[in-house]
Image 1 (tube, rainbow, N blue to C red):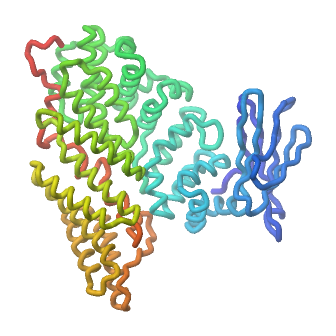
Image 2 (image 1 turned 180 degrees about the vertical axis):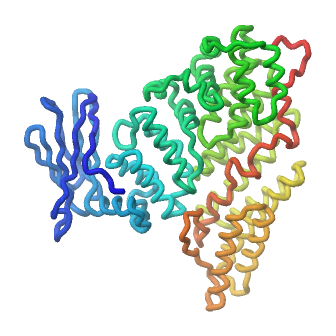
Image 3 (image 1 turned 90 degrees about the vertical axis):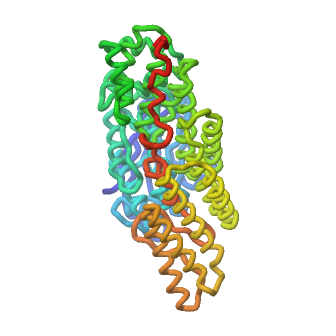
Length: 551
C-alpha cells in the first residue's frame, strides 16, 4: 500500500483545494525535494502562504499554487485564509514521505523512524493522515504498533480518541459519514495489540465528550442506533440527555420510542436478571417507566445507565457517560446506585488515565474511588480495589522518573495497607503476588551495580510472583531480562540491559525506566474487572429495599 498522490483539502468556508503530489526526478538527486500542485476553487478569493518558520517555496499563478518542500524541512504547512477562517495544509518532505511509504509497505525501521520524528505513534497518525484514506490510516496504525511496543501502548491508550477526532475532523484524520466512521473503527479493531474498538462504543465515547450533535452531524439516525446490537446506545443517548438537559428531556425521548409492555413484569425481570443481562433488562424498562411517575422513571433510568456501564466495561468513555447519566437520574433515596456510580466512574477515569500514563490524574481518580468506598456504610463497594490500582500506578510514576527506591517504598506501603482489608482469598493472592513481583523487579534495577548476583535473584523472584499471579506476558518479559542479566554476568558485566524484541509487546524496564503498561492489568483483566460473585454483592442496586417504596 502507498499513500495518495491526490487528495482534497477543505477550506474553512466549505470549498475544497485539490492537492496533487508531483512525482519525478526532483525527489532524488543532490537536492531532493517534493513538489505539490494545489488547485484552488474557481473564482476563489483565498489567501495562501507558508506558515512563518516553515521551510519551502510557494509560487502562485492565479488559481494554481506550486509548493516545493526541500529535504530536511520535515513538514511545510500552507495556510489558506478565507472570510470564514483559516486552515493549514501539511506537506511532507522527501525523507518523511519516503518513510511513510516504506512503513505502509511493512518496513519496521521506517515505522520506528516515523514515530521518532513526530514523538508518538498517535502524533504520527495525525501528521500523516492528510495523505491517507481510511484504509491507509488503519495500515499506518498497524505498521506503527507492529514495529514498537511504545507505539502499541500509545495507540492502545488513544484508539477511541482517534475515532473521536476523526468524527469531528475536517482535514487529515477525518471521516464524513457513518460508513467511513465504522470503517475506521472496524479497521482499528483489527490491528493486533492495541485492543478492541467497537463502533457503538466509539460513538458513545464521542457523545461522552462532545454530546449528541456530532453523532447527528455524521449522518446517524439516533433511533436506529438505539436499536442496534444489544441496544446499549439507547443508554448512551438517555444518559447524555439526563446529564446535559435534565431528566425530563430523557423521559420525553424514552416515551417516544414506542416501547410498551407490562411494567411490573419487566421490572421483575430486570431485578432478577443475570449479571450480564442487567443493562439490557433495565433499558427495556425505560419506555414503560416513562409513562409512569417522574420518580419511577428516574429510578429505572438510574439503574439502566448504571448497569449498562457496569456490565459493558469498555475502554471508551461511554462507561463514564453511563455513570454520569445514573448520577443525573438517581432519586434521593437510591443511595446504592449513587455511591456505586461515583465509585465506578472514578475507577473508569483512573484506568483511562493509567492506560495513557497520565500517572498523577490516574492516582487522583483511584484515590477518589477509595475515598468513596471508605465513606460507604456497607460492603457494596470495596476500598481495597482502587487502593491496589493506585499503588501500581504510583509506583510506575516513580519508576518512570527513575526513582526506583521510591517505587519500592510505594509498593511496600501498598502491601501493608492492603493487608488491613478483608480481600477475598483468591484476589488477595493474585494482588499480593503482582505487587511483590513489581517490588522485586524494581529491586533488580536498584541492584544493577551489584556483583553478587542480586539482580538475577530479584528477577527470579519476580518471575515466580508473576507466574503465580497469572501475568504471563510479564513473566516472559522478566524471564528474558533475567536471562540477559545472567549472560552479561557470565561475561563480567553485572548490569542488565533491555533486550531487543521482535514483537510489539510492552517494552521492558531499562536502567532508567520501570515496568510498562503490561504490568498494570487491563480493565478487563481478572485483577481489576468486577466480579458478580465478589464480596459485596452487586444485587442491592436493583433490589427493592422497602416493600412500600413508590416505584
